[in-house]
Amino acid sequence: MKKYTFFFSIFACTVLFFSFTENALAGSVTLKWNANSEQDLAGYKIYYGTVSRTGKCPQGGYSNSINVGNVTTYTLSNLTNNRTYYFSLTAIDTLNNESCFSTQISKKVPAKDTKVPNVSAFNIPTTSTSLTVNILTLTATDNVAVTQYCLRESSSSASCVWGEKPTTYTFATAGTKRLYAFAKDAAGNISVGRSDSIIITLPASTPICSSFSYSEWSTCTDNLQSRTVISSTPTGCVGGTPILSQTCTLAVATINPTTAIVSDSFIMAKSTNTTTVTAPEQVVPSTTAKYTFTTPLKFGVSHTDVKALQQFLNIKGYTVATAGPGSKGNETTYFGPATRSAVTKFQQANNIGDTTSYGLVGPQTRAKLNALQGVATY
Image (cartoon, rainbow, N blue to C red; front, side):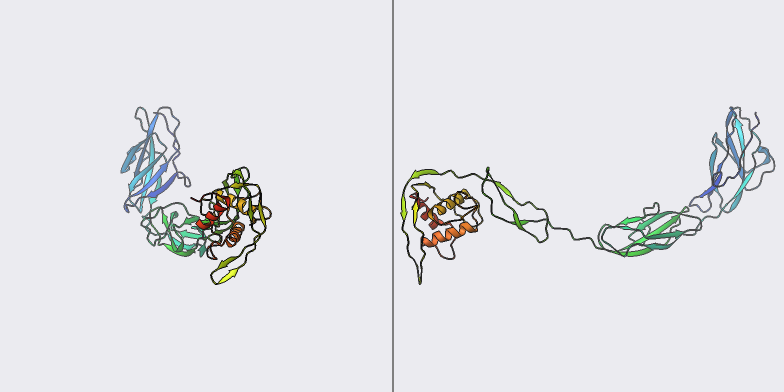
């Protein structure tokens, strides 16, 4: 058996330290030592007891011993709290030869820690516009050390999720809230919760636009028309899906030679009063388009009949517009205010309808439009 040299002593926080279990009668201590360099080293044996040894070799007498193998640290458990223990180490080679004792060390296993930590300060903001809030202050002390923290919206720590000291907390909903802070030490002692309150008010969400008012459709160009949004609802809304363009087709009419003369003036009589409407002298060109009107039309609709209607009205002298969309040669498929005004003039001139129906292209108006072209109404 070779001679072994031991370096077995207490180094600050690295060679010997203590940990405790929940059992008030069962403490523990962890021993560490420097390794031997002999090639035939098999392991180590720890001797310990509550009485100091009487000799330098294993026969010196300890009440307990344990083979720990070829390691350099070992934790002894089930030691009695508040008792002083003595420890020595021996080395064993591959032939089971055992050295004499190392230097003896001793340590009192302290009484079980039963003192709970104290959360002395805990503060969060008084108001917030976010569900996640900052922890302004969290101070806790313990007779040994605080090891973990927990935040809960309850005064009970029973369901705590323990962890490092928190810096933020996220609530699930807005409103008036109270948050509790707890602290725990290594022995498992838990503090009383300290709380603080907060009022969380989330910003109002911006509504999405659901309906729109538009400008008139532009002239059909390259089979496409466009328009812009004038207003939208609800007030202050954003987004939505306004319809800002549509495909269109220029109406192609069949041209038949015809001539017609419209009298230079006429009188329209109505029940108890008489309204005189003077129509301009109109000579329909010798080549005009015949178009059969079959669709009810009114303000706001888009239809190919509208374009034919505007063309008819412009030719007959009931001018839709003098320039731009609706003017002669620039007729559109949109029935807007200008079209409604021209239709009203046509109806008044032909004694059709009254103030409750002016501007609506119904059966009587369509029949008159078709009759003036010499086509049948279906």
